[in-house]
Structure formats: structure tokens, C-alpha cells
Length: 268
Image (cartoon, rainbow, N blue to C red; front, side, top):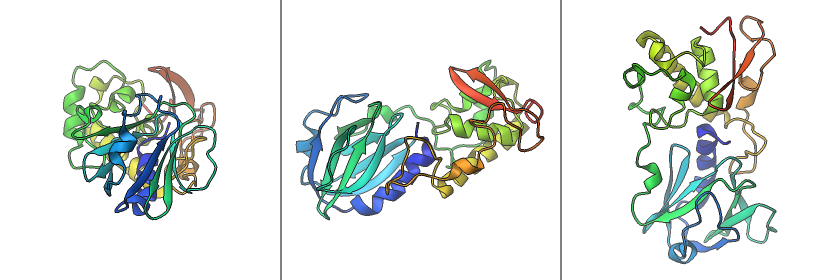
């Protein structure tokens, strides 16, 4: 699924084209997504100006003069800027036509995303943890929340109540760089090692954003181009291959129904 760097890349791709533009029309071809598209949304937002586009965790927030639209790409969603007369593709569900002639089109084969309008705060954002690249996220938070926790450290740092946006790919990469096994109990990791891990979480996410996100089969950025961070992955998706650091064999296990690859020699 698109992770935080992919969503941030999408934000940077679409924001210059839609911010400040008036919404001429919203067309909903398929409203049955993870949560049903807000009834009457197309009529509510028509004629409003897009004030700004922001991100919270993996959600995009399209701020309007009155209220906002909350967009999530789900497992396979993407946003593309197209011409108005471009033919709808299969799995194109929603489009937003803008006063500059551009059209923002939402594509989602699995329909696990969302497109919601609210006049006030969105309930989906209420209990989210801090952004990983913000000053609110640091070693003190990870260490304090991890005490007496028996759960493995990888699902712990992927918990959106602990910190948002550290998905499967980047959790695997940060743990490898930190030399920590993904199945080690979160409560058995020292403050010193959490300091290293915190730094690598920030580092790997910042690098992925700079590179334009990770190339996933279903992911494209706002211009329809894939990201390029996949070229630099050390462990994710490389089970059974040689470790780039010690040339040992990378091991693949299941943690919380997700595949996790690590190096038994480099990660303890």
C-alpha cells in the first residue's frame, strides 16, 4: 500500500495544480469505498475554492473555504492530474474538475481508500500519534510507551497511536539500519537503541520522500510517474537473498500477518 513518503510525494505533485482553484464539478462514479463517499459531497463543494492541501499521517486533506475533504489512497489508490476529456479508466471512481482546466482523478482498484467531506474535524484523525519527522516524535516517546510491552518492536513502531506513517517497508529498513531484530520485544529495547532507531526512522522516511517514494506496482505520484526509493532497499522484499552488509542470508518471517525480512547476523 502507499506509505507516508508516497502520500507526501502525491501531495507535492498535486498541490501546485489545485490550491487556489475553484471546484467546477465533482463527479462520483463509484462511491462505495472503505467508507462511503459523503452523501451530497459533490453539491456541497461545487463552487468552493481549494484553500490548501495538507497531509496528516497517510491522509490528504483538501482544505476548502467551508470544510475539507479527507482522502486516503487505501491499498492501491492513486491520484492523477488529467485533462477533462480523458476517457475514464476502469477503477477510476471520482474526479474533481477545477477552474484552471485540470482534473484530479481518483483511481482505486481495491476500493479500500476514502473520500470524505466534513464541515469540522475528521474523526479519523482524532487519535493519531505524532508525525515521524516532527519534533513531537523522539526517543523519549518510544522508550516510555514501550515499557513492559511484550509485542514485537516492528508492529509497535507501526502502531499509528505511537507514531504515524511508519509502514511495513520503512519499519523494516529502519530496524535493519539500527541493528534491531523486528521480532524483539519492544519492552526489551534500551533507551540507547531507541535513540538510534528514532534517528533511522527519520532518516529513511526523509530519504524516501526526497527520492519520490517507493516504487510499488500500484503507486504513481501526481504526475503518473513512479517513485525510485526501491533501488535503495536493504531488506524489504529480499527474503532469501544476500545481506548487503554482511553477505549472510536474509530471513523472512511473519509478524502480525505481515512479511518481515531481516538479517540474523546484523540484527539482534
